[in-house]
Length: 215
Image (tube, rainbow, N blue to C red; front, side, top):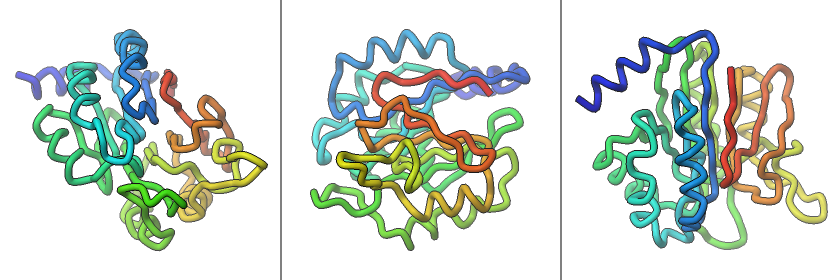
């Protein structure tokens, strides 16, 4: 029955789709009520990673998010262990998008979780080469919406304190070359809600308050 309602909604996608995307809850359960209210107006809900803190509290947050929407796409941030999050997604009927694509109407969503290396030794950090390898199969995907935890490098959405840019060069290069319709990301809390463009691609750092995007 759950899958039936997913397919029913797919068949009703109009020319304008409404996406709720968020990131970086970090165990703040108070953020979830707001997200649930926004989800009522969305065709699809996306988590861009970092539900937990250094791997702690993941299941509790996921329990609170359970039932937020019949179409919920999730990638791990650098604070989740991918295998743990994948297991919860399978249990709850969510779509685990890391390294995969998901077709919704005329659009294809592709996910790359984790972050580039940090000084904090968080649970899921990747080299630029590893990120590039995850992105490579998405190069020929049409009508692509890229979901990443790390933002693209040297943009308005990846600037940390003192003007230091901490985004992924591999993600930026992929966007420059392939020009997806949209890149939804997170990771840099100071840039939550900020937007930028790389060529024709709209890039948004979604943040824990979430943002509704219409495309």
